[in-house]
Amino acid sequence: MAGVTAVPTVDELRIRGLAAGLDAMGVAPAEPFAGTRRHLEERRAAGLHGGMHFTYGNPARSTDPSRTVPGARALVVGARHYRRADPPAPDQPVGAVARYARSDHYGALRRALGEVAAALHAAGWQARVLCDDNALVDREAAHRAGLGWYGKNANLLLPGQGSWFVLGSVVTDAPLETNPEPVADGCGSCVRCIDACPTGAIVAPGVVDARRCLAWLVQARGTFPVEYRVALGGRLYGCDDCQEVCPPNRTADRRQPPAEGPDEEAWVSLVDLLAATDEELLARHGRWYIPRREARWLRRNALVALGNVGDAEDPTVVETLRRYTGGDDEVLAEHAAWSTHRLASRASLNATEST
Image (cartoon, rainbow, N blue to C red; front, side, top):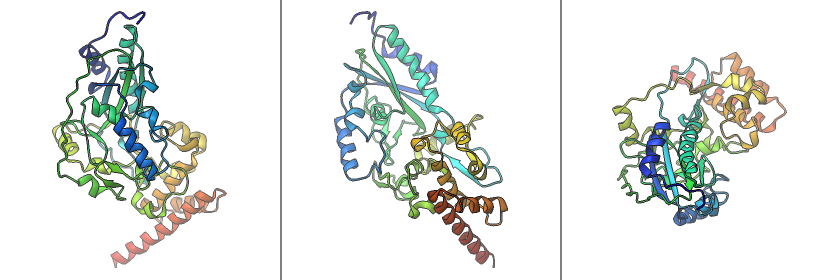
């Protein structure tokens, strides 16, 4: 290949990647993920994708690295830890944000992988970073690179460290040494994640029905399914339940208790969110996946959450719901009406229990 000076060693790339912020790195061959493609197509045909486009939209592309870099030979796969302690919740109705979305963890991962790609570019090879991108199934890339095993909740778990990681890859045509040792299953007979899922979305080990998964439903367009609104609780974006109960994660937390992220937004005031303009919401939360960049879907989530965690005697909460119930957006009006009834039923139950 013209311009090539040398092939960097895997150790050289690992040193560079870890210095740039990766917590783990491995290399996998860039062969098509035939089994993964079959699973995606089967699950999409069964409707388990719930309309999700990410990696399901074009399985032929998202399972073939050569579609991104012609002649691809290797995947340099990186993982970056994002587990942080929960800060105290404010004394007001707030929506919870999943840990991966509290700050730009993918941005930090992308920059670290960019350092690896830069080393390959400098040696004359093609290299492209894919991070939170529907062009590649990152969990399968990480599995093939020997970083971890698939848990029953379909997350990848790293030995001794758990699943609180964002994953990404550098696709390259450099002939890197790829001989990863597969990581043995570490779940055994444990089914805590399956039992803990608030909606029963884990329908079989490693199989998630997105139509029930709260982490997807808060990102999907349309009406939030009535049957899962109570289960949403105070969540605004994402759901961490299946990871919270995972024994490897809990063990890792005991060994090294996570620090609180100073720049992270774990809680969002629901009343403030519902009072903000579209421009303000997109400026604050634009790194999240918001369908078609329409802030109404954040408001929909906030309205459901407010019905679950708000106070029926709080005049600000009552006025917020009244305003949306009488608003022009029929979808938001319906969710506000549901939340109003939900608050009333909670208040009635509390009154009964206190007598």
